[in-house]
Image 1: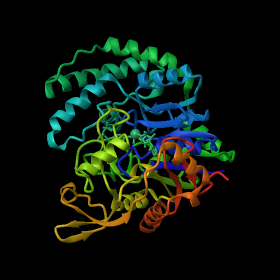
Image 2: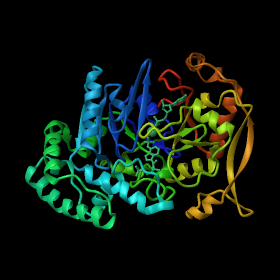
Image 3: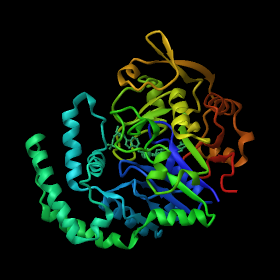
Image 4: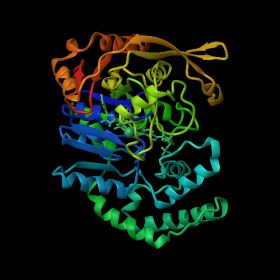
Length: 433
Ligand code: GDP
Ligand code: IMO
Ligand code: MG
């Protein structure tokens, strides 16, 4: 048996959906453990493209999929994804934790209002109500899946929260508030009716699956730099997304985790506010954004792109305890003469190799680069054909680029991805035997 955590090694959108789908073919269960529908995970199989926000990516491979207690659930979004899969002939074998918290329309109103107040400190959130839902969870105002199934409790909790939010949004934030408690109650009891058959104790199921020597994948959302504690505060998200959250977000002991795979894009991308030391604001950046289709899966916003930052990747190796790397989107850099790798920062004449906690220091960090030769551009079909031949067929420059990443990060490369499709993947380590 093997339990594998898949975690974002940078700023999110590294290709976690693709990697989870790839490994899912050999797994028994896939569990989402953090975040909410701020996430957007893409799975491509031949001509079919799936974009998931809450549904674990293992649904495409037809595996048992679970949503852990660490996730915040917008019921409407989840129901939409279930329907979308059903309309495509896939009936997800889904289980939802009783302990997961529920996003209400009130949280979305707060999200937008809070961002306005924050001015230059705003994170550029997805406006999906994620932060306010996690805030209410921490303040113990939250409504959990189990509460949704009990009309009396739901009403009581909604009564309490509604008064507070109405006052806050109209009187503190000075924003309009046109929603009624009755509307929310009606809508959410309808959602509960549709969702109740999926509700389960995820911790009990996950542990018993592991104890039966089956293979479990833990699907991370966001990326290390967006983690509430270890990310670039306050420009990240409102939950822990790093590997420890796979345990707290599902109710599985760290003793039961065997491998932690960090998904690392061959360059940097970031959607949202705050400094990004290796950001490319030139023609090369524009070229990578277009070719890599770097537009948010959730909001459609153009992603900021830059060279690969190994200070970030090394940091991700440390805080997650990565046992291996899955390097994605190497095909997108094809056709570039020279490629840069940031190995350290220059902060006011001083060399920095560790991620600074102070965002003002980070904003003044200038990347120190080493330059490596690029590789040729190829069509999607050529990349797939090459991936089918395996590692030895790769251009020598890709081999040395990935070897260099492994050397700098002192972490082995488990998987190389050269295209969106499942088939554009080279597996270097058989995780599930
Ligand atoms: P996630 O949030 O980490 O799951 O990543 P997203 O799905 O938001 O964004 C990654 C995008 O890159 C998706 O469109 C993927 O289909 C795509 N992708 C993943 N791996 C590769 C790759 O190796 N090459 C190319 N060209 N696209 C990839
Ligand atoms: P996946 O799982 C990229 C970013 C937002 C914003 C900050 C806070 O697809 O990799 P939030 O709505 O969470 O309060 O926004 O975090 N963000 C992501 N960026 N990929 C994601 O998820 C993200 N989830 C949140 O852009 O800067
Ligand atoms: Mg994404």
